[in-house]
Image (cartoon, rainbow, N blue to C red):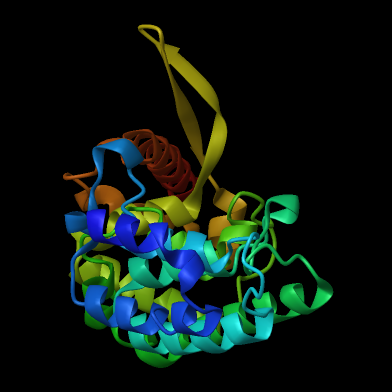
Length: 275
């Protein structure tokens, strides 16, 4: 926003402590908003909360003579997670900008020290605990927290931005995952238009690229092994997509991959029953 840009112009006059103090008020201001309102044509499907990127840039400014310490950033971030957990895309954006380790390009205001990495782990674990505390066995609340969010929001919250592109084929994202997994399935049954796109991003993986009419797009495949690890019954998960009708444009390739897997699994199941 223009106001954020004006503040950023004078950020060097603002102490690190005061800048950090802006994070929780920003979260409180944005948590009741639908992420669908944050669409910026220049950002594609990103939907960054207004004010988040300028504040992140000011906090991690390497030219600042006394930048905030990783410990101070972690302290404010944990408070921001507590305040923003009712809006999971907002929570994901906090994790993405303030926790993700970006190597030499910086994180935690450009600090890539062992302490920063340790505190990043602390922050992620707190986020996952909040996820379980607020949403386990609460499918309606989970769907409400994802309403209007991009379809990859839930997968990035549960895996963390650091692991999102290198998800292990075995193992679950965090302790007590089973309580969240069953809640996701229940939420898909209750609120399919909101939750099925989120589930699709959890159970599909990129599988190269397709070129159509000179336009390159990502191809996807159904992650059968990963789905069994996360949810147990692969076919039960696939059958949830029988009712999938409205799907975001960026998820059409995922949906087609899942539908193909559903057709194949149904045919195999029918064949086995006939033996």
